[in-house]
Image 1 (cartoon, rainbow, N blue to C red):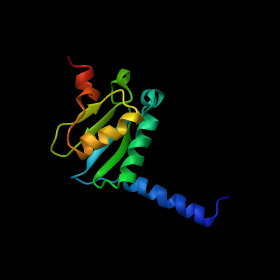
Image 2 (cartoon, helix red, strand yellow):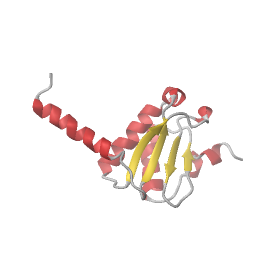
Image 3 (spheres, rainbow, N blue to C red):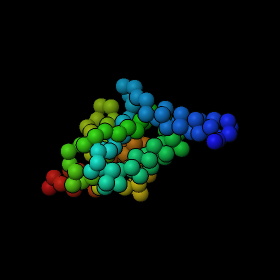
Image 4 (cartoon, rainbow, N blue to C red):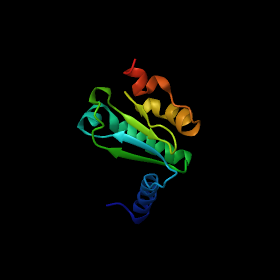
Length: 124
């Protein structure tokens, strides 16, 4: 059994993660496909990397959530970024290693990374 101090520390850490999932109308949403196909392709480390890095950076107004099948299983892991007032961007073949760049360039900088997108990888 954990000590009361250890349990409080775990609660505080998890509170930041839960807070990062609450959203308002002006919230940037990061949605990770977590159906069986996504999980098998490596979506769990992707969602963990987004959640941890957004929390560590203290980015306000950004929430990370999961969804079921997005419908393009052969391109998993798939991540959708929804910025209010902008077109949805769908990233494919995501990995935890790509997360920092997506946060820096797209979420913070406002410039989607074309070579990671569905349209770049599929629509030609």
